[in-house]
Image 1 (cartoon, helix red, strand yellow):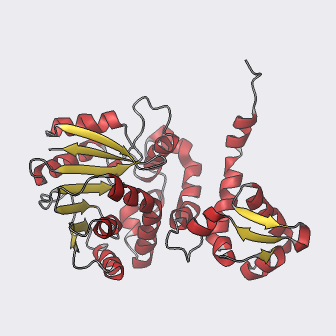
Image 2 (cartoon, helix red, strand yellow):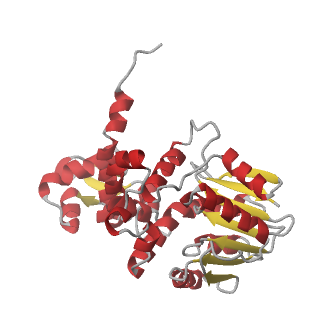
Length: 340
């Protein structure tokens, strides 16, 4: 047996150092400034208005972390994006996912400093502590903040939605209703992959104009419609498939069960209820991101939480669903499917 090694302890304990370097690089636009080209440290510093003291420590940390490549050393060294940062962290890329990292920097980084208080009190540690408003009231109180939040959520969900569109057999269905559809990305993705599907995306009225604009820009207005409403008020629209992307984990158990029951009531026999979440493995040992996301729900919501596949199947069985499936979407995310 190998001797105990403290390396992992130190790596995780000091992990906020690496995290903040990446978050600031995204926030300040390092990867977007580089694009597909190369720049010296001095050029990057001038473009981003960085003080000379930190330029090379900052950029070379990104090299050591594997987020930038560098040809040459010292002042003559030229920095460029890696294939991953060029694809996912350049704002000019259609696959940009940095919106969620910008939100991590602007909001979550500070809030997670109060995790200890959250664990002791069970109460949210975000804006509600200072304003008395819930996360959704706060974020949706300003149109620019609302759209910024929608874009952040789209960034973290885009690849999962694409994987669902490709892996789940939608050929037997004609209509999809996406509950809590935000800017309509899931409906847009499904409509593009499956031209015969007709999709409706539903969210609060303040969000509907954002979704409508995105749908028009995507060129799928003939097959994707929007509706504004509170999904806890009244029944869901009838559809062959009911979807929820990163919605169920926002709520406590009572509200989770209410949403599941509403989905069941809206489906025909043979219909499918699909959730896209970071579903935790049943023994709660492997999906670290799912477990940490559940702690994030404590920070953001208080009584919202992530859950295992076994949890989801049990709640759906209680609502009346008879058959279940779980589809890996890559990384920590999965689709939980319940059939009526």
